[in-house]
Image 1 (cartoon, rainbow, N blue to C red):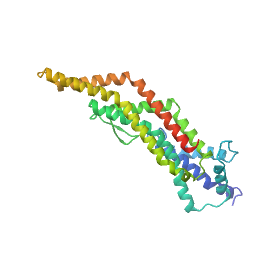
Image 2 (cartoon, rainbow, N blue to C red):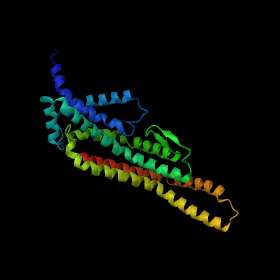
Image 3 (tube, helix red, strand yellow):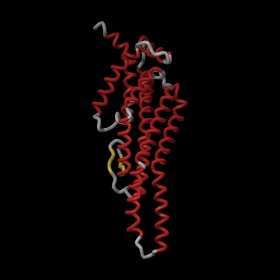
Length: 274
C-alpha cells in the first residue's frame, strides 16, 4: 500500500462533506442548476471546487471564524467516521447548499409569478412557452421577466456572491452541523417566501390597477353607447395599455428585483452567520 494512501483516506470523509455542501448549490441555485448546463459538467464543477476549497479549510482560519468549525474539521481527519454517521451529515451538507440556492432562486420566481399574473390579465395565458429552468409552462411576459432577472443576476455578479457566501459558511457552520440552525430555518423560509410574494405583487400591482380602471371605463362606455362592441375594443386596448405600462416601468421593476435580491442574500448571510 502506498504511504500516502492512509493519509488520503483520513481526509476523505471531510472532503466528501465539503463536496456535498458545494453540490447542494447545483440543485436549486440560479445558473448553477440550469438544465442548459449538462449534469456531467455540473458534477465536474462541484468536484473541482471541492478540490480547490478543501485545502484552504485546513489552513489557519480568519479571526471571525467559529472555532467549532475548525475543531469539527480536524476531528473528522484524525478520528474515525462510520457510514451511519456520515449519511445524515451528508444530508445536512446538501441542505446548506440547497437553502442558499433556494434563497437566491425565490426572487427570480417572484418576478416570474408577477409575470404570470400580468399574462393572465392581458390575455397572454394562451401563448404559453415552456421554461426548462422551472419545468413548467410560462407566459410571454413571465418568461421575459424571468430572463430579465437572470440577466440582472449575472450582471451584478450574483453567481460569484453565491459561491463566496457558500465558501464563507465553512467558517461559521461546522461540517454536518446544520442542526444547530434548524430552529431558525423555518423563519428564514417564511421570510424568503414573503419576499417572493411581495415582489410578485409589486411587479404586477401597477398593471392590476390599470386593468381595473380600464374595466370601469369600458363599463361606463358600454352603458352610454350600447351599440358599441366593447369586446372588440376592450381586449386590444388592454393589451396596448398593458404593454405600454410594462415598457415605461421596466426600469422600476429591475430596481425592485435588485432590492429584493440583495435582501435575500442578506438574510441568507445572517442565517449562516457570514
